[in-house]
Structure formats: C-alpha cells, structure tokens
Amino acid sequence: MDGDVGLSELGRRQISFEMKRKKADFPRAVDTRVFTSPLIRATRSAMAAYPPPEFHLEVMQELIERGAAGFSVEGESSSAFAQRAQAALKRVLENKKELPLVIVGHSLLFKQWKAPGCFWGDSPAAWPMNFKPYMGKVEWAGSEVRLRETYSIQEADVVMIRHAHSEAQEARKKRKRTEP
Image (cartoon, rainbow, N blue to C red; front, side, top):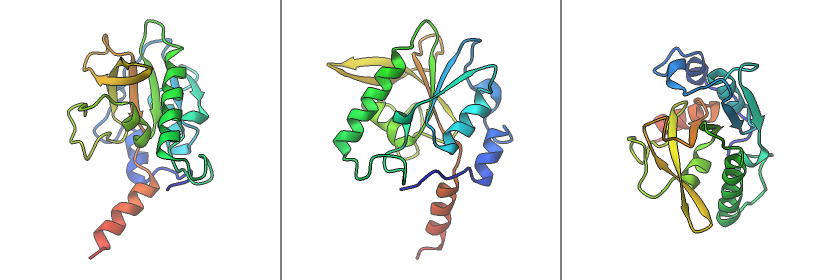
C-alpha cells in the first residue's frame, strides 16, 4: 500500500480550486471541527478546504489508511481495521454538538463507515471521489455506527472528504495505461 505520498499535479490543482470543486462546495460554519488523517495528502486537503487559523484541524492517528506503509499497523487484519475504523468514528462523534463534523481521510476508512447501499450518487466503483464532500447521517446498528447519505447540510452529522488526488493514484493510473 501507499506510504505518506504527496499530491499529484491534479491533486494540487484540486486543492487550489482550479478543478470542479470550489470552496463554496465545502460546508462550513465558524466553529466547524475538522478531523484529518496525519498523512500529507489528507492534511493538505483539509488545510485547503478548511484553512487554519479560521478552522481548527485535529490530526487523528486512527484515521490513517489501512496498510499505509510505515504508518499503520503492519499486517493489520480486515477485522482489526474495521474495529479501528469504528473506534475512530465514535471518537469523532463524541465531539458532535449541533454542527456537522468534518473528516478528511481515505477511501478504505469511508467504505467501512458507509451504510449498505449508499454511494451518494456516485458509481459504487468510483466512490468516494477525491476532494468531494459527502454528507452523512449517523445510523446505529447495534453497537456499530454507520453513515447514511444525506444531501442536506441541516440533516448531516458528518461531512467526509477523501483527500485530493495523490501521486500514488497517478502512478497506478499510468501503470494501467501501459499494461497490455
């Protein structure tokens, strides 16, 4: 898996708001709490969408992508990752007041949290897209918490944002183009 890779040229253009997403696409209020993975592609994306000092960014080690070389638990099993993902989301939700919380992170983590059948209007294979906000409503299933899609910021408990396009994604795209 990827280590702490930077943003690709496309990713740098995304966080500069030169592509489809604009600052106005990212829900915000004066005291919005933003939680981010410590990996550089996530923190740079968080800082672009919710720039300090206007917004408080809290870096959470638990939000690291599964298998991030040199950062996550070596050989972390699927069930251990699922437990870590649940614990991270519950910890974030402890901070919930009346405004939605923002989490900037990685696709595997978000896929652990989504309620079955939710893809926020995107193709299941493409979800979640880079640097796009997804609003979620908390849904409990026993002791597990899941996020169900909502399109209203007033109904949202959490806004998830996958990091902008990374160098590793760009390298995979180039490999696919050259493979027979």
